[in-house]
Image (cartoon, rainbow, N blue to C red):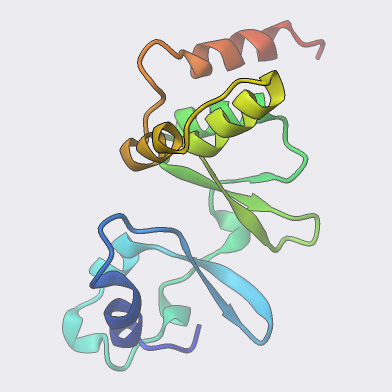
Length: 149
C-alpha cells in the first residue's frame, strides 16, 4: 500500500486489457481495494507523491460476501449492485478471493455434474454476462424467496 500511484499504474495497469481486482496490503494485512476510478480521480501530477494508502477503499466498506454466504445470495448481490465481481471475505476479514459470473457458472456446473468448457467460462468472465437463456438471477431470487425465513 506504500507504492506510489505512478508505480502502481506503470506496473499493473498499462498492459492490462481487463483490469482485475487489486487489493493493497501493508505490514502483512490487507488494507482495501484499489479502485481504478479513484486512481483516475487523482491529478496525474500527484501520482509520484501519493500512495495507494491515499485512495484505497477499506475492506469492510466495499461490496462483499463471506466465504459461507449461500451462492444464491452472492448471485443476488452481484446483480443488485451491477458488479463485474464481488470480494469474498474470510472470517478474519481478510480477502479470500473474488467471485464473478464465470466462477458462479463453474460452481453450479460442478455441483450439478455438468460439463462447461473453459472457453465458455472465460467468455462469461470476459463479457461479465451469463449465457443467453441462463436466467440465474431469476432462479436465485425464486430459490431465496422459497427458503424459510
